[in-house]
Every structure is written in C-alpha cells, then in structure tokens.
Amino acid sequence: LTNPSLDDILRFSKRKTFNEAKESIDTMLKNDKDLFSVWKEIEEPIIPLVTAMEQKGVCIDIALFSTLAKEYKEKLSMLTKEIYSYAGGEFNINSPKQLSEILFGKLGLAPKGKRGEAGSFSTKVEVLEELYDAHPIIGVIMRYRELQKLVSTYIEVIPTLLDANGRLHAQFLQHGTTTGRFASQNPNLQNIPIRTELGRAIRKGFIAPQGQVLVAFDYGQMELRIMAMLSKDEKLLHIFKEGKDIHSGVAAYIFNVPEDRVDAEMRRKAKVVNFGILYGMGVLALKKNLETTKEEAQRYYTAYFEEFKGVREYIESIKEYARVHGCTATLSGRKRSFESIRSKIPHLRVLAERMAMNAPIQGTEEDMIKLAIRFAKEDLEKIGLASRVDLIMQIHDELVYEIDNECADEAIACITKAMEEVLSRSYIHYQSPIPFVVNAKKGASWDEAK
Image 1 (cartoon, rainbow, N blue to C red):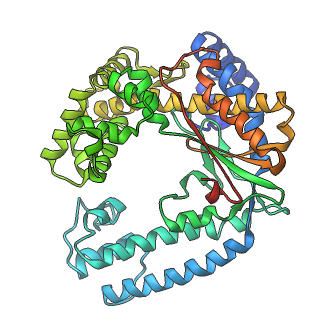
Image 2: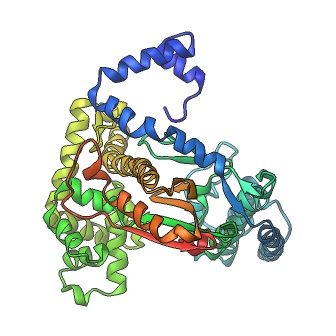
Image 3: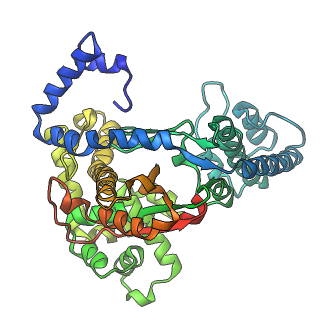
C-alpha cells in the first residue's frame, strides 16, 4: 500500500491498535534482512527531514499568481468563444457527455473506442490526440483543458493555501507510490508541466526570499543510467562512460550510422525507443508514441534488442525472477510484489511483467534520491551549513533547496558531491561502472533554477 491509513495498517497487520500493529510490522521487517536495511538506512533516517521540508514550505510570489489568474482566465474566455464558434453554439465544455455529443454527433467526427457507461463516446486526451487533424476544434479543446487544469489546480488554489508569511506547505508522501517514489499533494507539485510555457510560468511564482537563492539539483538521465548499470549492457555503459548523449548514441546503433550522421529526427525516435523500452512498451505502444507504422516500430524494437543484448537479457531475467519469487527487488533490496505475474489471464500477466520490469529501475532511482537527502543533510552539518540550507521540494529526480546567498557555492558543491556518491557511500557499498551526474542550477525562482 502507498500512504496507508490507520485502518489499512491494522488490516494488514491483523492487529487492533497502532502500537500492536507497529510491533508486528517491526517483527516482519526484522525477519527480512533486505527490507529491514531499506527501512533503517533509507526510509527511517529521512522521516524528520521530510517533515522539516513540509514545515519549511516554499515562498510564493502572490502578485505573480494574481496576474496569472487574470491572464489565464482571459485566455480561457477566448478559447471558450473559439470552441463555441466551431461547435455552432454554447455547451458545457467541461461535460464529457455534452462534448461527446458535439464532436461525434453534431460535427460528425469518427468516434474512437466504445461507448461509456453514460452512452457517449470517450473524450479522453488519448482520443482527442488521435482526432487532432480531423477538425480544428480538437486543438482548441486540448489547449482549453490544459489551461483549465492549471487554473483550477494551481493558480486559483495555491494563493488560498499560503501561511501568514506567504509560504506554501505542500505534502510530500515519502512512500507515495508502489515503487517507493515520493508523491506530492495539496497541491501536487510533481504534476506542474515543465515543457509548456503555461506550466513554466507557474514555476516562476515559486521564489527565493531576499538574501537567498533557489538551487535545483537534478540527476541527469537517471533512469537510463540505472538501466545501463543494472543490465551491464556493454554498449549502453560505453555511451555513458564516454560522456556521450545517450539518445544520439543509441540512434547510431539502431539506425546503423556514425554518430556524426545522427540527425534530430533520428535522435527523437531513439529517445522514444529508449524510454519505451524502459517502461515496458510493446510494438503497438511504440507505434503510437513514434507516430509511425507498426512495421517501422517493429523494426526499431527489433534493432534495439539486437544491438543491446544485455538489456534484453536483463529484462528476461527480471521477468523470470518475478515469476519465480512473485516480486522484484531494487539494488538496495526494496521489494515489490506482483500478484498477477502468474495469472492465467494473458493481459493481467503481461501488465504485471511490464511493471515488474521497470520496478527495480524506478525503485533504485528512489532509493538513491532518499539516500541523497540523508547524506546531503549529514554533510551540510559537518561543514556547519545545515542551518543556512533548507530542502524545500522533492520533484521526480530533483531536489530543490533554499540557500543563503553567501554560502551558496560551498553548499552546492557539498550537496552535489553527496548526491553523486550515494551508491558507493551507502550500506550496500556499490561501485557503479558509470558516473551519476548531478546538474545544479541556481536562480531567483524555481523556473530559473530548473
């Protein structure tokens, strides 16, 4: 379970009180050496640090959010009028049923998929993406939805959540996902889009107080590095050891061209394949993400596994381990169970295999992030800077700190070193064959520091 309630804990432990449940779960942990180590070395030490992160919060530029609210609502009004003009009349754009009637009834677009419980065809984003070129209304609706979500989830909400000092105290769930990853809520800061100007504008409203600076520390291409490290694939390891761009390097192999002949489109396709393999995509999912034919997607899929045999063997070994043991484990010993891995129902078994394949990678990634939080704090205390440096956010592979200007450079060097050395320094004393590069950037706002 992720972020379990008291009832969940009591049900799991089959006990009547919290203290009894804690004692029972402690005994379970102690009977599993690996899980006990994960708890004692990774999870328990950072509990007070995560609490401190939530209590510290992040400073918000209220004036900027007020400006954004006005601008975004004006844009929503314009998009609404544009949608009405294409639809030939007004309707509730936020109603899936009414939108379905407009798109598939009034405008006669070809529906994708089956009817829902309400009897209307789906208007989910996947459906709209497939219909994008069928009518200009689709693109406007997608822009409207993005803007509406930003307004209702962040721009209107964040100013109402601030304390007397203008700071936002979002919650960070230490075990918010089944792979051990953090999750965020009230509001979910991990879902603020970074690839669009609309999303980045919100990040500009997360600011450093006077005399301080925000610094974002980000592991570069972390999951792909972990996949190379765990699979021990010689070609992937070579690309990272040479400090080359992983997507261009993989493109050179799957397109069978010299690296200096890899163009932007080849790199884009290799990037889709890289992350597709990482997340267990099959040929059909690759086809959709590459926006190409099934034959071309199959060709890239086959070429990847012919070139990177170590990855193929690693994936098969993970699936077999999960089938035998019913679970997978991270480098540090964190386990995730898969009840459907032996299911006789094909699609349930395939889904379990896909999740099992990625779990050790995502879990190892999060183990490293949590160790980094611990070691960075310990090292800052050793050099006397702990009181001048505050962790304020954990977002995916990124740690964001609020640091006094006068000691920023020294603190950045300290945190970067701690993050890059987590595996060799941890209780497993693992020597990675490739470096884990940490990029640190400082700025007056979260957007500048990203």
